[in-house]
Image (cartoon, rainbow, N blue to C red; front, side, top):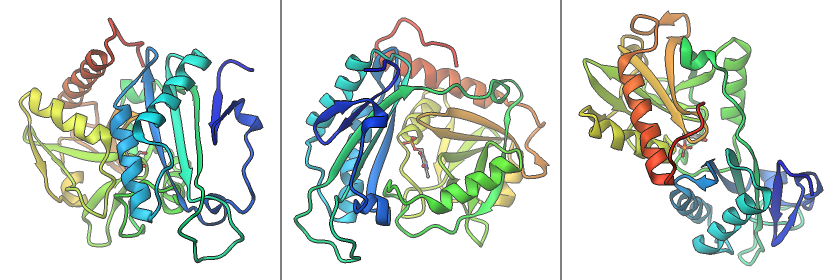
Amino acid sequence: MTMGELLYLNGEWMPIREGHVSCEDRGFNFGDGVYEVVRVYGGQPFTMREHLERQVRSAAGLGFEIPLSVEQFEEVLRGLIERSGIEEALIYTQVTRGAAPRNHIFADDMTPTVMAFIRPAPPHPKVWRIEGAGALPCVDNRWNMCHLKTIALLPNILAKNAAHRAGFAEAFFHLEDGTVTEGSASNSYVIRGGEMWTAPLGPKILPGITRTQVMEVAREIGLTVHEETFTLTEAEDADEIIMSASNLELLPIVRLGERSIGKGKIGPVYRRLHEAYRELVRRRCGLAELVPL
Ligand SMILES: Cc1ncc(COP(=O)(O)O)c(C=O)c1O
């Protein structure tokens, strides 16, 4: 088996390229499934339980049950780490409702397709942490169940690609009325006058696991955190903007579309927060030190 990546599919272990599922899997036909991405540091999965519990809630929101308990799924993830030997990794998990002759109506007794794979964590562009990154404002035209982490990601994908093609690291989602929601694959925060705002939980954003950690470290370092709506105009006038995701950690945004944010440079709050976040990761993973990004 090639070292460097590994797949678990419906109870079996194999190289990723050998994993096959039915062309009538509802994940393939309808995007009818849920997923998670877990970051592994020094061989230790960070916030694995939180991710797997959210996966259970996402599936429940779509009306199906994951056939593995959270504890059994944790064993699968530990198996991927141990068998692959990859220490700095991303684990992708996906559970779909399963395969059946194509029909919008689903049966209640389907057998879900369960998979998880591990790959080395891809490096981020170094420039993001040196000069900061840009985000492109995009109208958030997703649905009203964004709190479920489903594999039906087309609006996110189209926005992210539009941003990427225009030279931005992320899409910065806002509703038609200007209310900021989140990123295409991240949560967003603004800093103003030494305080932090992030969109409140609800059907318009994913309750990011990293978001919870970011708010925890923000409070630890003495920042006041508001889980309240804010607008695109307020974001444009912010001192700093930050985005977060398991894979990304924290990302400093210094450009929002054509506009510079703050002084157009990475700000002090991002630096303190990201350092505190990495310290939290190091501690929770029980590591002497983290591999630099
Ligand atoms: C739409 C969206 N929001 C937020 C996040 C961040 O979530 P987490 O911090 O749990 O990785 C993601 C991650 O993929 C996402 O896709």
